[in-house]
Image (cartoon, rainbow, N blue to C red; front, side):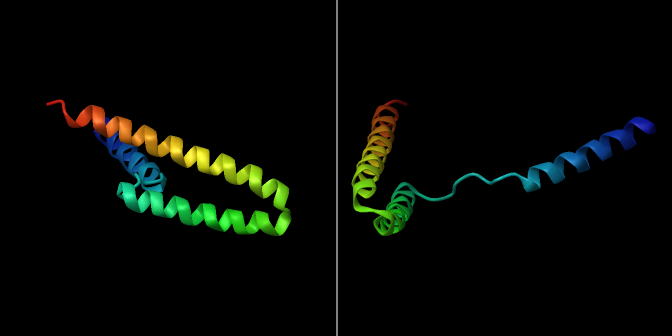
Length: 84
């Protein structure tokens, strides 16, 4: 009987931990990219308030990162799309 209680307690504890964890991203690719672009625009606006020199450098890095992420996603979808 004690083991059954132990299992129940462990199960409850595990369920509480899982409930507190971050959920998987449910956005589609275009929604995710649009969100990223909006966030990048907000960051550019904040950085413009700080100084134009930093803004140019950071904007280039953001654009490079977005392009790399998009290319990586496209490469992944192209390679898995033809195989079955």
